[in-house]
Image (tube, one colour):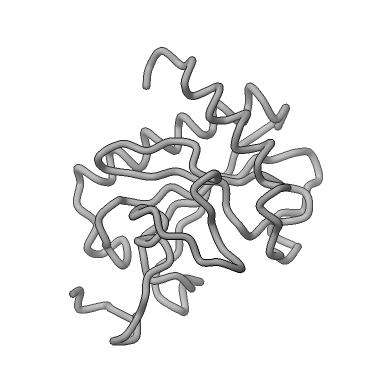
Length: 159
């Protein structure tokens, strides 16, 4: 455990559940949201969306690291490689005109899930990403985005 831990003692990590194939029945990420997975990372369509940035991706290490302070370099490399794949896939399939990444640590840094994760957002002109609030989504709404990225990643020669 890190010196900078904010997770409660009895914390059940939702991202560890995704990586392990466990689905929570009524909410959260589903296995069909996963767009890429290897020995180090899992990338999936986020279950919380921003109004003008639908289909954003979260990239998580397959091993539980709470935050940036304890993330190992070999995992960081794979996280950014997967983020690059997601970004290029979004550019190719979503028609976005830019990409933003975000990563938060500790409550005052905006972290609210106690497992390191990197957000990859599709960006568009005047999308107001930082001026809007996220909302929970339906798995059926996420599926077309996941399928587009899975198909693109499967065909990308640099996987």
